[in-house]
Image (cartoon, rainbow, N blue to C red; front, side, top):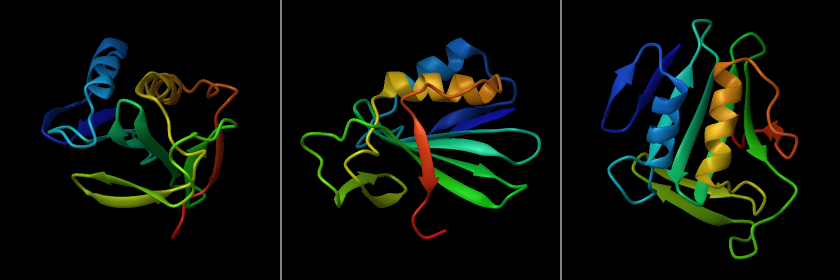
Length: 129
């Protein structure tokens, strides 16, 4: 398992505490605005943004599917079409694709441990793929 991100050293076997610390340190406008966790088979989960403005995607190389996470509580201020601007670029999100960092931590730990994602998290095809 490999944990990588903007402006921090790659970790080959990250602990839960290291994942938690780094995901919680992400900021859309900061030095650390994205991270990914990759398995040996090439599957990964990635986050862009930080704090209360996170977007999460996953990729499965076996199926070739890239999916974006969403939930059942659309953000009251970020309507469909609101853009997430971070160091790697700009993404246009739907109102139900914004996540808080603490939920992202849980999603990353579920991926790491091959556990089910939180029940409030669903997946749909990522735009453009």
